[in-house]
Length: 366
Image (cartoon, rainbow, N blue to C red; front, side):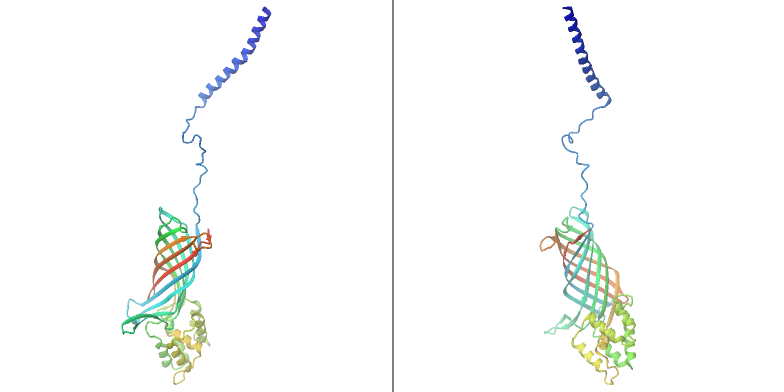
């Protein structure tokens, strides 16, 4: 009995020690954790939801620079005044008519000012071609009228425009309508001739007053070089070179061939009369020019322009529609615009008016 009691007491003591040791150890861990690591309060907005704030990044713009090639239907007028005068004798208006041409524009990403208002930079380029002038005449009832007529004058060139644009409308240029204004700089290169009045008679004066062929060519050269709108370093460099070498052998003929190639042949009535006169010569038979020489002489007998303007002020307004309709790529832009450019060359004041309706595709995004 005593043995059993002793054994039972020892057995109970053996099992009791480990139990009390584990219990005390657990209590010590809890107490230590409460004092050594204070509990952090839980944020109800975060509990049960993944922390994605650190993973989100600002959505980048879909492009920095977009190149949009296409076609344009344009109508252009170039008004030329001598000094500040507006009389018929010192006023000419070149009529470019309506014609299709190539088109390309470059656009930067938008800088948002408001939800539907922003600014971006826009640049575009195109070519110029004038084959007619506006003249004052009388209609069938004898009333004053202005018509576009082929006077044999020709002018060609090209231009580029860079401008900041303020727009109102869609957040995406390629999806929706926008209306805006721009004012920037225009670079323009033009070369050709025009008539203030019926100045074709000047070539007749040269042919009649010059004692020989050499003086006739020299008068044409000097008149052109001192013309208000002619700049040797501007406009068409080939034409400038040929005019500077006009008195060299075959100089006038080479210039005439180049003008025929560049501007085309005009068969208007007055041209034919002058060509016939210059090729057959005056009654005394002093000149007897070839067809190419006569055509070059007629061109030089007018007011000549050879201008490069690098930074003329230009302003315009536009309405554009970005859409995927009738578009071979993801997006296209239909845009109508009207702009005016003013600049001066010596005594000449020039105003360039342009209406454009363009269709371009979003091709390259950088």
